Length: 311
Image (cartoon, rainbow, N blue to C red; front, top):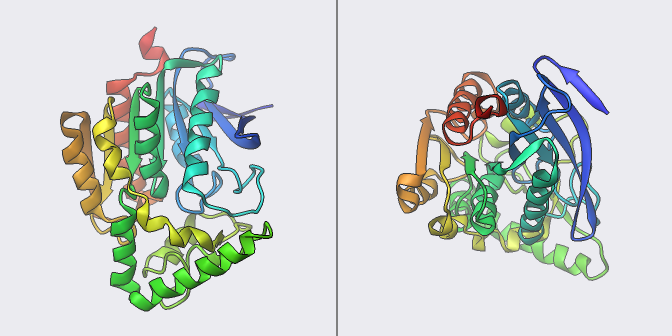
């Protein structure tokens, strides 16, 4: 079913990733139905996030500017299937990215040569890795990206102390024990300073709650805390073949900016960098959101073009 809005239409779709159903929204410009030949951004959220937690405004802006957008939930999260719920596996999420890219390229509305990978926060790192592995995407957009799990873990120690890291490791080990029986042990993905949660910087809880829907599940299976440090998307930068837009928040307490700067240096002339004097969660609304979207649309028009511009 198509849902029409100002300058865009949205439909629901499904695709399979490793035998599990993932669900997505497809946004299209409303200028022609059925449309064809669109550039398409494939989009997913960051750490523990879902498509309903602040991604729709970005997709709507892209569609109104003439681009398609496929916005999906990972397995175990949101509207997608997968048990146990709230299981964040980097390996599985990267499989979901590959499946989502294949889904987008098969859509009649989409030009398969002009598919763009878009990620924010934790998925900003995923976007770089997925684009490097795919090798055929037209461009990559990484907003406030988590490019180095080791640096992010050090940041946790910096604002919450070593004891916090040890508590998260303990919860992770308990979750592994639960996994033997197919279950899970959960910790909040965000919480106030001093609480036991994956993100407890001063801006984390108010920033996340501002973009999450009322019924959002703030839990994540704790085992991810045992492996997060070893996920280092920056090591994939030299394999990237396409243009990359890096949108950096200068006061980012969650995703260290220095790691993204290393990515920019490794990419060389393939990188376009835009910086904003804000914190990690500020780009999801207000003036920072408007500036980020404007920069992204300019980048897309330069490197992939809209369907109207291609005709």
